[in-house]
Image (cartoon, rainbow, N blue to C red):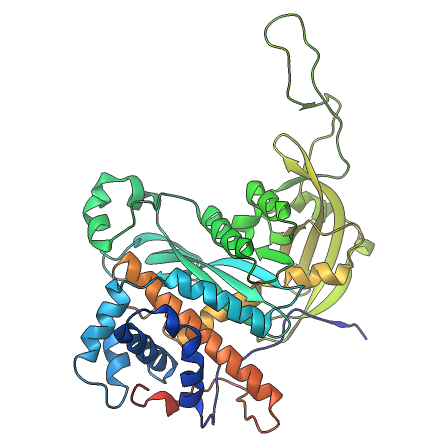
Length: 437
């Protein structure tokens, strides 16, 4: 019987029959409340977390506050001001959050996952909104694009960071100037690609050394950017990233040389491939040329659909750093058993790394996809109904803290003999609809 390769344990977000959920939130809130300088801010943060965790069809500010029994009328305006323009530093809260995630979920072999998540928006006045490609829908839509970093480990998964990605027009086009000013875009924010933005957020987490990690995984947008992969390797981390099929590699390291000086002009100083060097091949061509015996069947536990069977091959290759040879890498190929769909990955794991480890890393996309999906569907991450740059980040910071609260509670219930954890899609418990504590 084939061994089942565990990627990360299934972590349903729904919680039922939790009598002391309000008390648990009261214990959780002091992890972060000392970082909020004013009493009004601490109360607004607590109320916001209560509302995000309550069972509501939509969690924009007004219905969120009105659902909490006993909330006075002015609370709606107070929460709107707290989210949209509050002078509190959510980056400081996230630093504390990373420390708490390390304590609850940290392990030496931890994984950082960088990914994008998009949010549909009506109108043209919200920060960063534009008709652009949305990966969630597979087509262009009027939306905002977010970049997220998550933590994946054996105990569980949660989100760590978020950043709104601004289309180039929002930075450089004079036609967008009238939109930029009301949205409060910081002057220091300049245009950048999503992969570069994801790399910057990932690097910020690693450099604080508050959270252990060994691996970085990412989609093809980041995996197809060699500079970002070299940055990960430069920090002593392993990466396993999906890459586009046209990504080129060599089967053996080609010879290079510094061309001889011909007596005129500058002396050559940069290495070049020798004329007899073979051409690099695409990873798609590498997969097509492999014999049947090079593929092995592997079963991995990925996502909520259960085990996935795939044919897998891993070949030691040489990456291309145009136009020269780069580092030695593994090219990991996964072919769906039924559909034949091919996924291609590049991994800088050592030469003696087991195939099972590479299969596990290549299957690490789904945990953060699930974190984003749960945060949208259960915690209202896309229900912010704010237009500004500050409000977008404040709202998602609170959603990240709410998500981690639920993950912590589920871990505690699993350890408790009397814990009653739901197995499916129940809500987060109506017990949170109480007056603020």
